[in-house]
Structures are given as C-alpha cells and as structure tokens.
Image 1 (cartoon, rainbow, N blue to C red):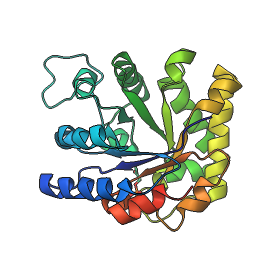
Image 2: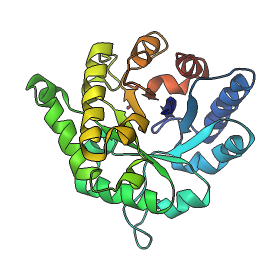
Image 3: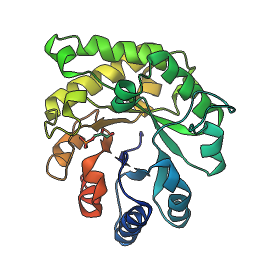
Image 4: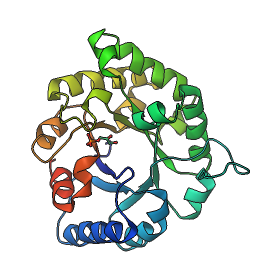
Length: 251
Ligand code: 13P
C-alpha cells in the first residue's frame, strides 16, 4: 500500500528563532495525536540540523528544498546530496516550479539532481505541473508527460520506487486558486497511468503522488479523498502549526 504524506514547504520564510518555535509547536501538537499520513517539513537548509533533532525524537520527518546536481567542489552557495545524507535528511524537494522559473532549472538538470539524491539515499519529492497558459492551451498533460520522461524515466524500477511525486499546477501556487478535486484526480490518474506504462502497475500503485497549490484545512479533505491523491505539498498553510496539522489530519 502506498504511503499518504503531507509535507510542508516552508520556502524562504522564518528566522531561526521563528523556525524553532514553529517546529516546536508542530512537534508538541503531534505528540498526543495519531495521523493517517507521514508528516514531513521541508525547512530552509540552514535550519535542517536543528530540525533533525526533532525528527530523532518523534514521528516528524525532515526534508530539504533543493540540492545540487554536482557531487562536490567549487560551487559556491550550493548544498550537495552527500551533505543532506550526512545529516540523515530523509527527503528533498526537487524541481519546484519556483526553482524552474527563477533559477532556470531544466528537466535535464533535474534528472541529474535526482540521480545525486538517489546515490546518497535521500528521497526526492519531485515536483511537476503546468503553468496557466499551458492549461488554457490544453497541453497540460503533454507538459507533465515531458517532465516525467525527461527527468525521471531514465531511472530503473528500483530507483523509481524511491520517488515521491508532487503535482503542483503552477497557477494554483500561492494564488488561493486551488485545482478542483476533479482536476487534481484527473491529472494524478494520468501521472499514474504514465508510470504504469513505463514501470508496470505494481510500481505505479506504490508511488505516492501529492497535490500542491493553495491546499488548506478547508479543501484538504476533499482533495485527499480522491483515489489517486496521496496527500499534499503545502506552502503557505504549512507556516502555521494549527493549519498544517489540520491538513495532515484530513485523511
Ligand atoms: P501554496 O500552498 O502556498 O499554494 O504553495 C504550494 C507550494 O508551492 C508547495 O510547494
């Protein structure tokens, strides 16, 4: 059975003390609750070591937001997969649309980043999704298919089984304009069908596909009840412990 996952993407928010306060709240609120999903928080890189202390003590899992495609060396400002692994970081977001847009990350480069993470046993939370114009032109399925083919479908079956996918329609990110549960299900089912074609039904049934884009405590339950939606990648609402855990409680 595939895993349900709710992952918070903090993006570039919170000072160190604010981050500590938020993770502390999340940790304490989780203590006396049970969840039908794995709860992950993806903090800014600078806070990962602090965050792993909480992961060691509880059920909280920790993720990074980006990693380099290079092994090591003269890449000022970059963080390698080996560095993440050395802190026992379990997950790393790769290919977020903000990185594709502002840092011009390409499908090829994202394939290399994925390879580095897998080399070091860090699980990629790999983001795919179309921009508004692509949906309006009705080419959103093609766009997502190309992202899968160019960044992930070089992996063998075993490698692919370590991938978590996040479908994030770019027009829904930070806009308050959530995809309808029907739109999310339609795309998630399409993604799973592509995985079935490439790797077979068994692998496709095991891969968690998260939805991201203006997910909040009000709409999470309906989104997560869709057959092929296995949780969420949460931006804004992950910055408040109550909202984030209400979403994690929506299964
Ligand atoms: P919002 O939840 O703020 O729309 O962000 C989604 C996102 O980009 C998560 O990676």
